[in-house]
Length: 483
Image (cartoon, rainbow, N blue to C red):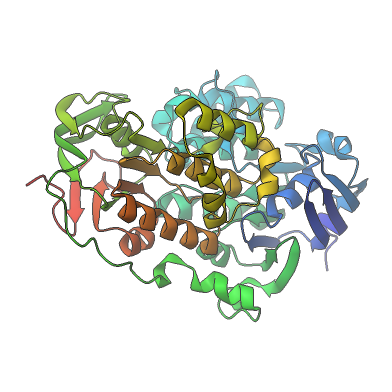
């Protein structure tokens, strides 16, 4: 066996209500390992402990060997000199990794120049080549705030991998990507072990884990419940939790009961909508209506205008053509669940304080918080932490909790479960659908997973074409055009 590039011996993480049992791994050149498991099980914390970036309040113990050099896990600062050159992290949240004031091509070029050591001209050329390969040739001159979530994720991927580090840790690298872009990123990830490096991937997408191959580890509550070659573990798991995880893949869900009857008055109606961005037309002559208690799916490739459509229906963005009519609901009746929860929470205050401020500001019912937390599987101890101190999946569920407290009549949910494991995703969407039906809330649900949309939604709106050449609108199921 070749000398290992990455070895972790008895890594333990403790503090602030978190316990990660001793965890070990060893990866030789060309090898790959994928971590799966429930949201909050410690997958990202293991990655952060290896990088030396654990949140405050958490302590690590154990030993690391990185490219032949020994480190103590509790000395995170000792590994900073390795970042980008020998050890690279592709982060779960692109908004935490990108400079909001620097254009996409410049951020990637900066990594090529200062990490990989290329000349300014070589760095610029390499940056544009990376953008083109990821389907982002039109995004190079844009700021991160002008990109969709999937686009920003690919830019962060390119910037993090530009230094050519032989050890790559990828935390949810395909979150929020449509199937063609997801497959392209999987191919790019596979290049690191193909070149003699090693790849440690964290994902909730079981199909991605199967495609990556190598070894798979299933975690639950900070402990390994199953481990072995990816194909048998992710096809015929032996553990009870592993079997539940596979059974919760969206393609295996049972469809919920359909909407009993469409109410006569829609909560939102749109006629002849058209919108262009950056000189490219997203859609034209779009007509739709969403009725109380109805679940309408929205699908299409990254950058096709799904989030823009939601902003128009909510009155945040104006259409270039057409008009929108909304019911006279209460003042908080039209709400959006954002694709990237970190952008929707103040990082400086505890979640308890943020929820208290919401309840006080809008005179909400405080007693509704506890049952919603229980329904979303959120531990009350998380209330004492700040948004950046919990997992992405936990923060995503807090975003759902906050919206549900407002009891909207129309909710545009933009990839609301993209950070959740299959079991938690199924439970969370079941709760969303149940409450939408019960409260007569019209729900538009955006997802890149066609199986999820097919199992959950009454009707589906498809935006854009896979090749991005113009845009078209089609509908499956009953017509989305207002009668």
